[in-house]
Length: 493
Image 1 (cartoon, rainbow, N blue to C red):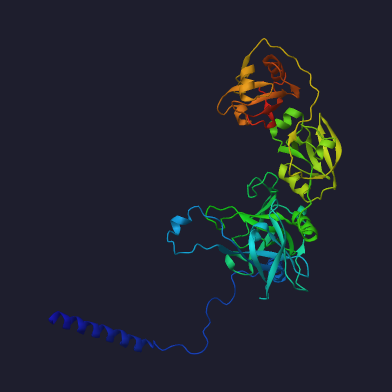
Image 2: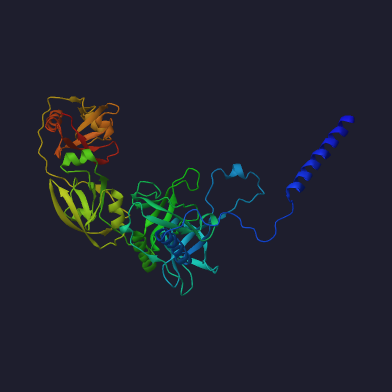
């Protein structure tokens, strides 16, 4: 008790000393009067005219383009969930038969045609559209195209604000772009970034062998709900339809993909006019030309796409196109990947004529092809037979090419009958990480041609490979499923 009194007395004395000191120095505890200025009087950096103009460009694009972007809400049939009994085990609990989703769309005509993604409105039982001015309309699905993941819906309205559709062929990697849409149900959201890559394919977003994947890649933030919205440049021109993201979480992690607007315009016109797409096809199976393949056929560098198969009855079958041709350009536009050619041709209707620049046997030729519609019932791939010179010699039954990491053998009649193998030499052994394996070859593959000559003996293949030392050889191979392709392998000295 005595200690507590001493502590209290000490606190009073100390407080008194502080108060006395404050009074002696004129210090006041009263609040300041008048307006208080917070922070520094000027920004750390004064923006120059260029920086101000750059910032203003984003502002103007957002203000002018946002009114032409809509929010699309869809009620669709719920997807069957094989595990739903585990999550909904009670008999009196009703499993929902419908689900609601949302996406974005772009107004492309004043009377209400709106471009969006197929996956936004697929299986829709009802569709509604919310404009940027908060007006809401019921919408009708006019047409869908699964192969490009595009669709068109229509609302009954007039004098709508239109988006300006630009030219995606002029895009450059590094160019500034903005994504405008309604991600995560947050209406009229604008994000910015750059074009990260062009002609991005093989993402397997479209589960169809005829699916067209030739995306613009961007780091402008795209999230669920952005699908069908606009990717625009700093002039406000729509240059892509935001479609997908690369993510392990379902949310944005830095990579977004958009359909080039040139392809989207072509598809939209067909859907509006006909309700479906009348797409033309060349009728070829093609593959990218790598370094070894280019060297084996005499190209100065890897470029173009090589024709591996031709569709029987297709456009290429009746034109001057052969297996082994390398398509360098289409209508004077260079192509270096299969999806580039596929995307360009997909923008053309059946009956259109395209001009191909082809590399064949060391020369460049032109071939005009009248595109044909896809035959849904029979699209069998057939080979155009070429005349071959053979040097048959049956004295050897196997050979090992150690520098290639590959051993081949002749095929017995029993093996050919049992395994349904074509004529040629069977690859019986592959060395791990050898040139043959790195070129995509494996055990069980049959070499049918080398240097465009039909292979009928081990000695013949040895002779061809030995003649290509320091160069590359072009092989034609067939796998166990009957799929044929070309492979280029560099032959060491």
